[in-house]
Every structure is written in structure tokens, then in C-alpha cells.
Length: 477
DNA sequence: AAAAAAC
Image (cartoon, rainbow, N blue to C red; front, side, top):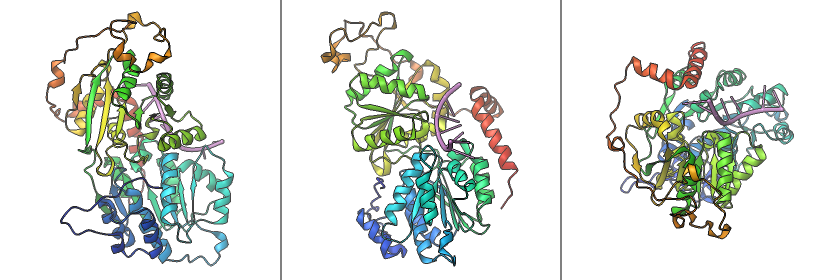
């Protein structure tokens, strides 16, 4: 079920309603079930265009109502054009939606199911890490809509349990992410199985040259829909930075969560091990936490996400598996335990808060080692982020780091504040470095910039080159 | 330096 609150119309502007799009009564009924009346801007733009059968290149962050923007008109199109297949037994898939992560696929599938619940259309979600049998059974029984991650879908293709020869509509959700993750060959393989004549919808949070190239080769005369300026951060998200010593980061996160009384927060770690460690540390500190990352089983990942949505867990410690697409209602705060390696990921991570008009906080920890990453991020978002002092937090002195439980577990509540001057804590006068306050000046774009990028992110650059080479060999549409 | 995705 979608948790994305849909926008209320601008005062004074004519209020567009879902009823105005000519959607079938069964779809409107499903929307009414959820209390949705007014489309968000991207929905208002995308729905008519998709209904016309046009290809779409959509630049939209998650939280803009993008999923409904494509799934509602797709459902309508499938209802309007009854399957031409003489033999329903062959059950060709009519619409295919591809996503980069399993969780995103699952979530899109929940939305599609909700919007199509009063229609005869059937859908199934297909991704790895879970038993293949139920997916196979659903595919054999027949579905009109498949939502999938590329790998498992190709697995089904090999098993001949899925028929893509009649697929009229293809959606590539989070296309930039799919490129980052090296899905291009898989995408190519899947697209080769589809009919040449079809409708293509591609969504991407960013408009990189690679994405434009992908759009050029996959889309036919697309309508471009751009809702938020790409690479911009929502201005309803308050971003702050706290400088912390490396060894004090875990305590700092616990402190921030306690101090602010956070009850629902995602903390991003750059590594799977880091995420697990931080999660355990928070648990020890009495904070209900769980980690979600690629080394967890799919069952653990789903359980963590569900517990977080239900409120049984207050802190979800995640790698970038959760950086994009996860739709969690009104997340008030996101914490970057590590600054991300790629500046773009910063935008995606903090996009988890301040959704659909609500305000949010994005808190990032940084150390001396993060200067370059920070500079890259501020260059991308085109402004500086406020450096603040972490009030009341006194990091444990590394020289005197004895076990902090000697006084018994009862004193854990507020221990950081109350333990000044004893058990290894000491107040420290902190001064703001002058460079903190320097206004951001964009560096002149030059060839040396490229060279710097090469030096700082060899992996990312190599990956980009690989994608570029693959894209170069693709046909122009 | 990392993460994600099929078995």
C-alpha cells in the first residue's frame, strides 16, 4: 500500500481530481478506498501522457507519487485494450515494471495491487532471495502485470515460465540506479525479448549523460516530464552536519537519537559491517534498531523493513540498499552515519525525509577524512550545509575508554549528559573551525576537475566508463 | 575504499 501522501492543490489553482483523467470507475474506486482525490504534480503530468500511449522520460524523486503516476494509466490502458490473445492459456505478460532493488519491486507491486484490486487484472512481483515456486505458480496461472528485478526475471525467462513476447508496456523505474548497479546488459537482454512496438516509460532521479543516452536508445520520441529539478534537494529538508571523531561516531548517533527523541529514523552506513555494528551498538544503548543490507537474508530484510514501518523498530540502520525508492510514511529524520562515496547518493538518502511536502531533518556526521566527499556533495547541491556543534555530546576519550557499564544498566538513560567528569567523559570546549563558516564557492569546471574525480573515485569512474562503452554500442532509436 | 542483483 502506498504511504505517499498525495498533494493538495495550490490555493487558487483549479483543483485537478483523479476523476478528470477518464480513469475507469474501478480504478477511481480503489483511489477512493485510500482517500486519494487530488493527483500530485507528476501524476497530473504523467497520467494523460501515458494514457495517450506516448513514451515518457520522467525525472522524479521518490516521494513525488511517481508510482501511481505510471501504474494508474497502465492499469487503465490494460483495461481499455482487452488482451488480443486468442488463447488465454498462454498468458502473455502485458506490462513489465523493472526496479533495481527487491524492496522497491515489492513496494511498487503493493501499489499496483492496491490500484487494480477492483479490476480483473492480475500482477505478481518477481525478485531473488526468495522461493521461486510461488512466483512460477503465479506466472503459470497468468498475470497481466509483472514487477521484477532483472536477475530473477531472466531466471524465469530461462525456465520458460514467463512470456514477454506480447508485452506492450515497459517501465524502467530508478533507471539511473540500474545503470549504477551494472544492470545494463540484463536490461538489454530483457528488452530484446519484448516486441519492437511497445510503450516505454523511464524514470530516473538524475539526468546524467548516461541516462540521456539510455533514453535515446530505448525510448521513441519521449515526452519529458520533470517535476523537481534534478540533483536538487527539497527545501523542506533541514540539513546539518556534525563533526565527530571517527571513534565517537556510534556514540554520537545514539546521542542524537536520544537527544532529539527520534522514534523513526533511518541511519545510513557506507558498509554492511558498519551497519550491523551500529545496529548492535544502538541495541546495547537501549534503542530499538535493526540493520538492513545485502548480506542479510531476504527474510531478515523484509522483517526489518516491516518492523520499522509498524514502529516495533525505531532505527533502521541501512546501506544504500535503502537509499532510493523506499516509501515510508513521513519519515521525519535521516542520519548519515557515513557521508556517501557518491555525492548523488547523498541526495537520494536525504530524499527519504521531507516527503511530499512534509518537513524533515537530514543529519550527517563527518570526520576530517570526509572533506573531499563533503566538498563534492556541496558542489552537487549547490549550497553549503550548516556545521553545527553536537550540543551536550562529549565523546569518550579514546585513551580512557573503559567499559561504561560499571554503574549498572539503570543509568544508561541520559548517561552521556550525566556522566561528565567521571567514567571517562570530560567536557570539551569546542571551537568552530573558521573554514566551516566560509560560504561555498563552486570550483571552476575544468579538465583538472575530471582528473581530480579520477583520483578520488577510481571505482565510480571506471564503472561510468564501462556503462559509457556499453551505451556506445547500443542502437539509436 | 562500497553497495546492489540470479542460482
